[in-house]
Image (cartoon, rainbow, N blue to C red; front, side, top):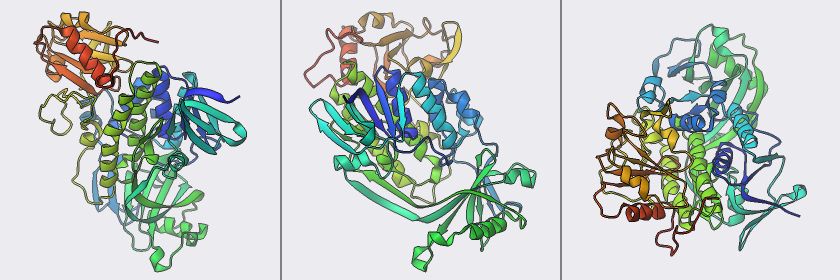
Length: 514
């Protein structure tokens, strides 16, 4: 007999693990399969953005992630060798702790992917999900009630939905016949993972990224945690070079020159070659199948946005799948995943190809997106500038510290598992207007959430009777000034739009929470 589940996730990288955690938290059954024998054994990405740390905080894994933090000077150096004094030093394209905490309850981290993946996989198991390593997708076909997947010796799976989180060479995307558009490339590169810890050898804290400009050993050196470093170097096939030319002896000589340590005896842990390229899928949805992460939009490492975008994909998709599985939302909510994430993914992939960019702290890219889709009720307000939030529909809801049930929490903490209506201090009437059968809370500023300094009302532009509806992913879906005869009808209409019911001939009437 085949295994049955609500959501089959193919791929246990950050995108797949984030999808699974979010779907599980919202009530779906989830099975994750991964062809590798375990989680990543190499560092891969290391930059964890403010928004990603917000998600880790919601999921209760932020402390475990930070336990693997990389100790370095959070700056970029341009230098002749690692031992020499840098010619230039400038900040990462991530905010400082102070800049992040001005707009968020948390701040970025530097932590390697091979530390993060086991943390997320453990959380999936804690939530009751299953992760099967060493299990490869052999065949996938859609059926009238979902998908049927063959997993070779591991048997078969029937699922309501499948999520392709299996990288740029996605077997899910290939099985679905979804096209793959090449946006461009910055060249061919080789890299090496090695010990010892160069900071310990040099006796000082070193930059998080060092662009070494020595003519005989031009490369990028990065600490990646656990006393390990990577060196990445461009090579030129058109000049007759081959990745095979980078033998252990050649790497040893290059690393000695690049570090300025002629006696260095590096322990080479892994080597590889890759194209620094950007590509996007023609669509991220095909019926009951969805794409996330590199399967949907592959990015170059520039700017450190690939892993973060992948995790955000999973967070945005997971709750939608679960709410449809539970009968709370309509199929149009799933269409909105494509409407919101496809343009963003394409824009970020294209941006990752630009070698020269205006310096910024990363917050506009990370927190400043604005979604437009049929489930977002655009109020016509002007877009926010930079990362300053105005609780405009389509924006990430603003962070404000509040008191909730005797504890100091971020208002963002109150949105994660349901729809939430924030109202002005005379908005009690909205509490009696909520539709039945939907997980939804109404929180009145100044009553449920003490607001002595009016910070919450200012951040959300809450007039005495106005209301703001926030989705479980922390995106503002709708706002109302409170001037209406029938608040029940106004809020029911907003909820139906947000959950994809409006315009598809269905209603929330009579639906109950599973």
